[in-house]
Length: 242
Image (cartoon, rainbow, N blue to C red; front, side):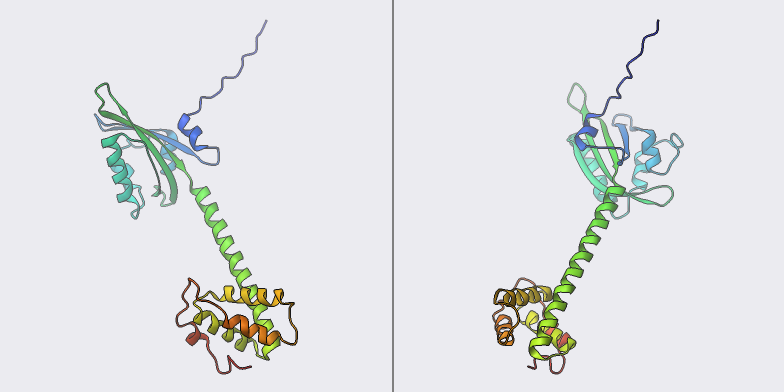
């Protein structure tokens, strides 16, 4: 008679649980004995640095050599403080692997003490957050592009209103908006939105639309974004005509 064995569940590291680390974030482990200076790296740690597992003996110098030059000093200060205090730490920085590829990683660590209370060992995780970092960067770029397109659209709408109400061409309408943006220290898209909102509340375009548009622009109060020099850069002959 055969009996089925229940598969053993792999024990998860509590720190990994706390960080919600999943398959999308490759995780490496390290350990250093402060009494002997001996390091231990998991296979993932080697691979993260572009090295074959066990191909070299891990050392503090090897670790430091793979830190991105712009991040190296800050990370080494964190490690030095950990060796002294033993307090848990976490920081994100860049590394450059053996193939010259730059990765973004999040390093966590904590000290372990002996019976006398001295910090004798440091253990921790290194999470490859490159993919998450790149995803966040792409989302931010997409957001900025979307904001830029929205800003452009609202400026174009405001230009159209001024062209219709003031008899200006496209350049003249833009210059009129820029002059008021500069004088009120506001962003051009914000001035355009206020103009469109004011006309919308008042019932849109009509016989008195020109007067209402002029009143809205004249009533603009200084904002928090300076546009010093904007009027001079964009002013053209006839910009304030009408």
